[in-house]
Length: 429
Image 1: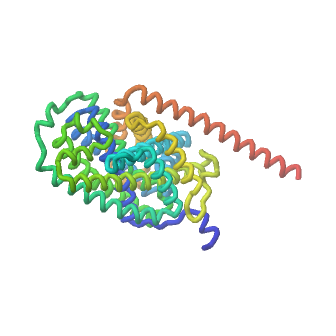
Image 2: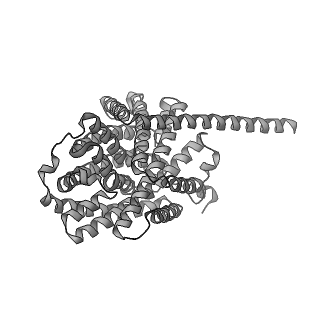
């Protein structure tokens, strides 16, 4: 292989690969982990919260698809906001994406550990979590094409198992479990919608891989729309069955909510199938998350907003970004609190998509393929859901962003200082 080609990203992903990565990134934390957290907040109105989250995600997805058609490159909203709003806005988008997805990665890894421990009693959930992070970090070093093929297989197994679970569970639904529907009122409903929005946002992974997608102007928008259509229908079906069979209080009680639903139905084979599906889904989500985070780091390093080492590529993979991602996700998993991390991640990703919608509103008429009302609805949805989260969560998110700006300023000053030294050395010669 030519050394120059070896040290750059390569276009290898077709529509099936990109959609597989998108669906694999969405179907995991939301269904197998966050469903229980959201049920604890809003009760039976989880269904409506999920519907609101789906509307917001669809508007944001269409805005992202329109932006990707104009700017088919790695980095997603980091690139879009930098070009359409300002470099400062782009940095905010990229930094909040990293914060959200690194937090989400630890949620997924912890969810996998708990699900595995429920399936194999006596095993340490944290040990399983640590081994999973190590394995998927290594797998990502083998390249995005292999990761994409693996995701398609994982998605097929997971979606098939969830459809089987839903079909069997329909017969055991007790409609009284949906009463009282508005257990926590509108505030609880909106907070749960914000949490469930976090569960949908895996489709952003597709836009961050823009430099590795074949025919990106066509493939990325189609893959985003397909991902949202498939996952919205699946989420609604699974949530309806879960609340109907178990009730929101029991659904919120455990770390592996769907495992508890399958146990309540009583068929041992269904428990086994669902347990295996939860493991494959969470495996696929974290696999794609490590890929997406490392590509965002790659784009930000190219833009001068992260140290240049994160833009280093060998064998067509940003290996520094991949290794760093694995280490940070493992460190975050030491916190061990899924609700705390999930809320922080939700606020971060809502800010990220607010900037995506603002960027879409600034696109010229020639690049517009959706009505302007779509990004307007997406922006208002993001703001409404973000402010519905606890004020402590908002404060933590904004404080971390402020720290990010301070580090960015220090990095820029260091880069200018190094450039000045190099210029002086050249003049002395």
